[in-house]
Length: 76
Image 1 (cartoon, rainbow, N blue to C red):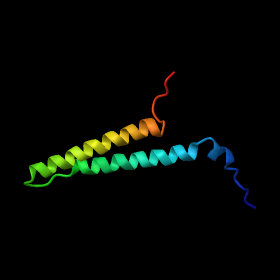
Image 2: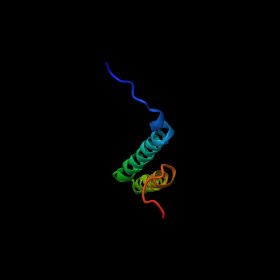
Image 3: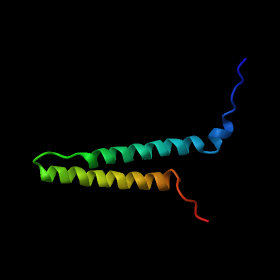
Image 4: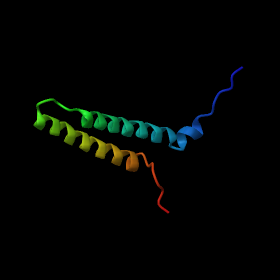
């Protein structure tokens, strides 16, 4: 028979929440990179708008991953 897995320590340690926040942050980064890679032929203003939106999303995503998800370097 299969044994039941005790997930209480996994959930209590905050690992699930950390994983969820990391996935959200990386999704924001991917959306930002998508916008940053868009180029509209013959429309310079629209292209610049997409690039700026991409930069904003990448910045927000990087901040979210580093601060909210608490990844990266630990301060001593």
